[in-house]
Image (tube, rainbow, N blue to C red; front, side):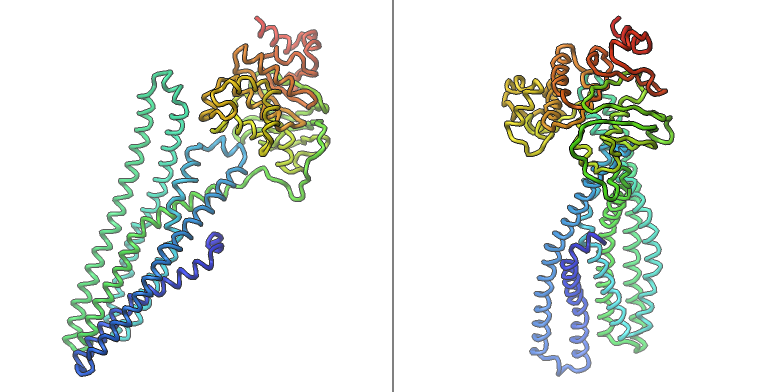
Length: 569
C-alpha cells in the first residue's frame, strides 16, 4: 500500500477507466434484450431510427471504452513499472544497510535473483491486481443485480455454482502459490551456482573440473524442472476445473432457462440476456484464471521482497548521533567481548588496550585469535557484544556510521576493484576528486608509473574484480584509493600477505608512506613487515599475550620470539 499511495491519482483514474470499460460490457446484453423484447411484444416500436440510435449510443460508449482501455494499458502499466522501480531501489538501499553477518549467511546469487527477476513480475501485478479484481467484482455484483430483476430463482440457481467453484480453485491456487515460492527459491540457488562457477572459472579450469561444475549445474537445473513440472500439474488442475465449471454453468442456464420459459416464468429476451451475461461472467472468470499465474508470481516476488525488507539492520545510527570530526586518532578498547554468532565461541573476551594518536601498532599471532575481528569492530562492520570502543574518547556508537567510516581507511588482503577504469577505482576513495588529486594519490602509492604504462593509462578498464591487473598492481591501486581518502585512522589487514617478494617490497614501501602521520593498526603474518611498528600486540585466544616493540619482544623470548624464529627458519 505505501507504494500505491505514491501514485494514488493515477490509480484513481485507472479505476475510473476500469469502471467505464465494465459498463460498456454490461450494457450490450441489455441492448440486445431491449431489441428482442420490442421485436416480440411491440414490433411497431422497433424502428430503424430506434436501432440506429441504440447502435450510435453503443458505438460512442465503445469509443469511450477504447480511450479508457488505452489509459489502462499505457499509463497503468507505467505506474506498475514505477512501483517495481521504487521497490528495487528501496531493496538495494536496504541491502546497503544490512550488516556483514547477513552477507556471511546469504549467497549473493540469491540476492541478485530477488533484486532482479523476483521484481520483474511486480509490474504486471501492481497494475493488474487491483484493476482485475475491481472489474471482476463490479461485473459479478452488477450481473447479479440485473439478472435478479429478470428472475430471482434462475439467478440463484446460476450463482449457486460459483461457491463450490471458488473452493476448488482456491485449493489449486494455494498449491500454485507454494510451487511458485519453491520455484523462486530454486532459481535463486541456481543463480548462486552459476555466479560461483563463472567467477571461479580460472580455478575450475586449473583443476580441469568443468565436468564437475556441469554436474552441479545440472543437479540444480533438474530440481528446478521438477518444481516447475509439479507447479504446472496444479495449474492444469486449476484451469481444467475452470473449464468444467464454465460448461456446467452454461448447461444449467440452458436447461433451467428452457424449463422456466416452458412454464412462462421468464421470456425469451430474458433467456437470451441470461446467456449473454453468463458469457460475460465467464469471460471475467477466464481472465482471472489467466491472471492467476501472474498474480501468484507477483505475490511470491513481493513476499520474498519483504523477507529482506523485514530484516532489520543491526548496526544503525542511534538517535541524536553526533558527527565525528577533528579526529586525532586515539583508539581505545575497554572490556570488549564479541562472537560472530550464538553458535560460535567468543573471538574476543574482555579485551582492553589503547592505541595512541599517530601510533603505528601491529597485531600478530596465530589464526583465529581475533586480529581481523579487531579491525572489523573499529568501523562497526560488526557490533561488539559488550564493552566500549572509542576514538578520541568518543564512543563509536555515539557518532554516525558515515562520519566514523569517513575517518577510517581500510586496506585489505583481498582487494576488490570495481568494473571500470583505473581512474574510477582510485576516485572511489573520494568521489568527485580532481584529476590532479587522483594522480598525486597514485604517485604516493607508487602506482603512477605502472598505470601510465597500461594501454590506456588511467582510463584502462581493469576487468571484473581487477582481473587484468596483477596482485601487486591491484593492491597499489587500493592504497592509492586510501591516499585519496586521506583518513586519520588506517587499518591494514594483511595487505601484503598474498604478494610475491617484489610486489611486497613495492607495496610495503607505499604502506609505509601511507602510515606517516596517521594512527595505524596493521594485521600481519609476515613479521618482517612490522619490525618498525611502535608497538606490537601478540593476540591469542586468551587476548593480548605480549606487548612491546620488535626488539623488546625478541629479547623477552616469548611467543613473538618463537613466531619470528619459525618465520625465519
